[in-house]
Length: 218
Image 1 (cartoon, rainbow, N blue to C red):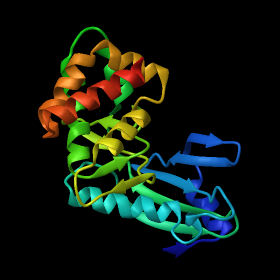
Image 2 (image 1 turned 90 degrees about the vertical axis):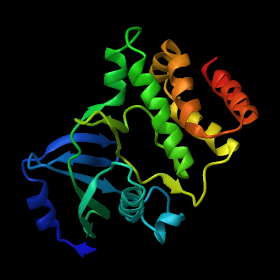
Image 3 (image 1 turned 90 degrees about the horizontal axis):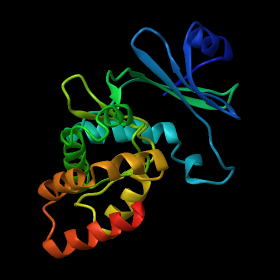
């Protein structure tokens, strides 16, 4: 990790496009040069982020996802700016469209992207990926029509496939927004079919999971 000064930070973000901010300040910037700058703050005084900052998790998760052949961002730099108390990750911009946008365009028309999304989530679960931020604005549809993950700091990667409880909890994260619930409900059979065909779960487990997803969408 490289430490930078306030002056270096200002030089780094000069001319960059603000993509996201909150009440605490800047969160994500696009340099316009094929790179994204993501800033991280410690949200609580006493937390695990004191020992393992969110930026470190982001970098570690990117490495693990690459090992699992799951498309995600490529890290260029990990920085710390003491004057603004922020860690920063600079990574190569992942080109693609938000999954929410793609599914919205297919709303009540084509079932294919929904089925493919179901297969992708099943692949993540089979590889032990518990992605808490797996809503439809943190998954991209890439130019090759595959899926890629962004905003990957809030993630656990297990050594074995996720159990039923974690799968259902992950679906609660995926379906946290009403807009996304409405999209999935419009092609629920296709989504469930894609997940079922890829999940390698027993019929009993699949039935219980389907009921759980149905309850989340109710």
